Length: 460
Image 1 (cartoon, helix red, strand yellow):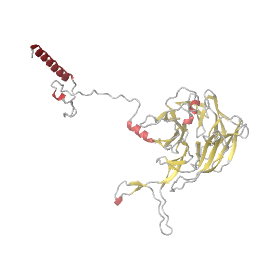
Image 2 (cartoon, helix red, strand yellow):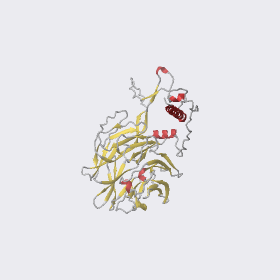
Image 3 (tube, rainbow, N blue to C red):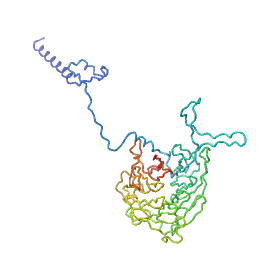
């Protein structure tokens, strides 16, 4: 080999060696923290220039949560929100229903302990004259009945144990609205006839359910029809009667019907046909002009027993007037009116002092329910209200809200958010309507306007 080629070879070898050592020196160490070689780069074990220090990942301070969210509380609240129905509903009712009480079964072998819950059996009749059997233990619990929007079938469940069971087999397709009365023993179903224009209203009697009998889903609902094209309908506070409005050509007629006797009484006539009714207390029915943005609305009261013996306007008691987009919700004690304007500002009007108080929330009375003693209001309140003409845009389905559940204490003026359904894990956006409470105010029920499913929220 020539001297020139030998020198070139040496230079090449030096360059290669420098490159190798440079690569090993600048390559980051990948040593594991366990002291084992598994998972490390094979060549790094022989790198004399590698750092022996293990790189520790930077400490990341979690962001401060200013929402007030506490995981255990949220989980508990989430557990209280339950979807009741497995189908869209046209309407529902809450009533007190008797059931056999679960008893604690004793431990086998006579041991001492808590035992286990078991259904309360119906006792057998003891033999012998003059011996009276001990009746089974029962309890009254809040129960729900609701109408399947698609078929008109009635379903039911207890509030504390959601076990949906089909009750009736009578099929009336495409129910738009349903009201229940007489502790769930009467039902009013409203739907469109085949022509797509005529409103039919069917009043049915639901067979009584006896304690301990099995529900097979074949109960038949029998009844009769009210006049066609009933414009509006409301249920009395005791759920024993309905008030409905229908057009006779020149006038709008208002009548009451006792759901037990089917007795009908005409109590109102008016040449003006655009009314909405509310039966907040047994004495007074509230009539409010149908609302529209920018149009002044008015609310009047009529006597629920006698109404008006003559023409509308005579003995018609004006409650509110000149409020754009007015809708109302009278209180059970007959002393207050919940109402809004077309900005969706919520107010309460005192019938005795003629004074209105702003409640500080924006929603519609149709998204609220009064407490039993008229001192609190529960509402489904939109988190965000887009610019639009209200309540028209919401009525027509142009706008759908995502709501939170709120409680308003009218005595203290405090407003408390109970739940944001869309914020909890696995949550769902709710546009709440048709709110209702059980008799003890343990549960708040509502229908989601987005899909018409029935929901339940535990208040205690």
